[in-house]
Length: 127
Image (cartoon, rainbow, N blue to C red):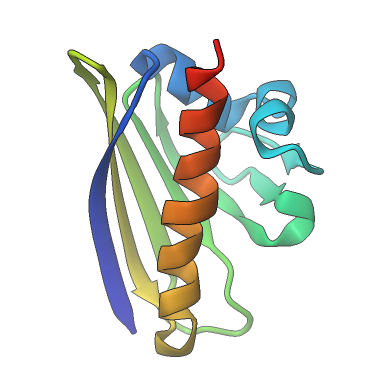
C-alpha cells in the first residue's frame, strides 16, 4: 500500500470546486462522462463511467470531502481526503489519498494529475 499527497491550484472558488465535486450535473460537465452520486455520508458515487467508485465518509461544506475509494476486495480502506482553501489564484486543492494498492499506484497518480485535476482546471479556465 502507498499514500499520495499533493496540492494543486484551481482557478475557481472553494465553493465552486466543492459543488463541482458533489453535484451530478456539474460533475458531468467537467468529466464529460457518466456519473452517479449521492453526496451524503454513506452515499455512493461513480465517476467516469465507473472508473472511480466509492462512498462519502464526511462532507464539510465548501471545505472538505472525505471518500472511500473501492479497489476490489482490499482489506484496508483507500481513503481520499480533499481539502479546499482559498488562494489568490482560486483554490488550493489538497488531496491526501491513502492505502493505494501498490500495483495501481502509478495509474492512480497519473489519473489525479492528468485526468481528475487537469479536467477541473480546464473546466474553470474556459470560463
